[in-house]
Structure formats: C-alpha cells, structure tokens
Amino acid sequence: MSRRRALLLLPLGLTAAAGAGFYGMLRGLRDGSYDPTGVPSALLGQPVPTLPLTEVAGLDIPPLPIEQLRAPGRPVLVNFWASWCVPCTIEHPQLMALARDGVPVLGINYKDKPADAAGFLARRGNPYARLGADATGRVGIEWGVYGVPETYLLDGRGVIRWRWAGPVTPEVVTRDLQPLLRRYAA
Image (cartoon, rainbow, N blue to C red; front, side):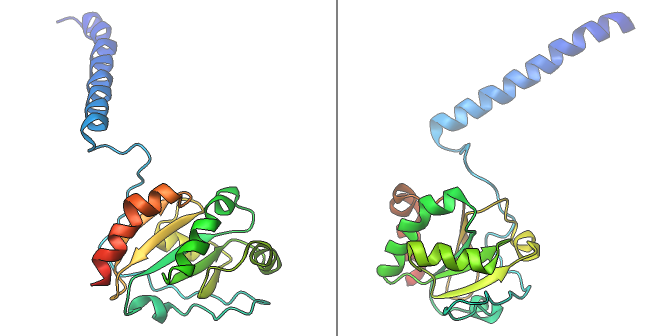
C-alpha cells in the first residue's frame, strides 16, 4: 500500500474508532453500566487521607480532627463545601435533613474565608456536627476533590465507601445514600 493511500485511510480509521467508542457508550447507557455523571475515585475502599485540617475561626462548631475520620465508629458523611459555591446552596437542605435524621455530617470548608463560611451557616443553618477548614485546597487534592460540593460516605472504620461529585439532591439521598447508610450501619 502506498503512503498516500495510508494517509487517506487514516481519517477513516479514526472515525471508525470514535464510532465504536460512541456505540459502546450508548450501549452502557442502555444497560446501566455507564454513568455519564459519575466521576471515578481511586479512594473508594481506602482509608481517609491523613492530612490535618485547620479550625474554622469564629464559629461555635467543634473542630474536625483527622483522627475523627480514621475510625468514626459508625457511618458518617464528609462534605466539602464553600460559601461561594452555588451548588452547595442547592444541596444544603438535604444536608440539614440528613443531620435532623441523625446522620453525622462532617464538613470541610474548602478554599473559603472563615467570615464567609460563618455567614453562610448563619443564614442557612448548620448541618455539621464538626467542621474543619481546607484554606489552601491541599486536603481536597489528597481526597481527589474535583470541585465543591463533594460528599463522601465513610464506614465505621474510616474507609471511604461512596463519593458524590456535585450537589446531593433528594433523588441521590433516596437512590444512593439511604441504602448505603443502612448497609454500613450494621
């Protein structure tokens, strides 16, 4: 085969490969094996990262020492959030409801000013049993945070069992979170 003919066939081969990938994605959507909103996490099944958190100054909420996450003794949610985050406002009522229902919600205030975080919680209510700060974003990097909000479910031994990138909605609570809370409560 001549070089010219090979160069002419190259776009056809690339188009065929893209078409095969698209077909595979559509098939996965149909049978449920592909989730276009899912963001993979290398930390699922792993213990929490060990970088320490700082205290959020000016708030009357107990700090969140990393030891609290290593072996919480029961399932807990860890929620990365910020006052400047619009989706955090959307998910906040769900976090408040989970806290009212007895689910321990632990917060990590991400790249935020303490005064802004305090104002956010004063206006909307506080779902957090404990709160830590990640002012630099380094803790978020260790956890694999893509952006806020992100929520993690830890089992009683401090192993990450679930991760949700984006706002926790009522549908996410019903479909994903409640079954996992029941499963890991045992």
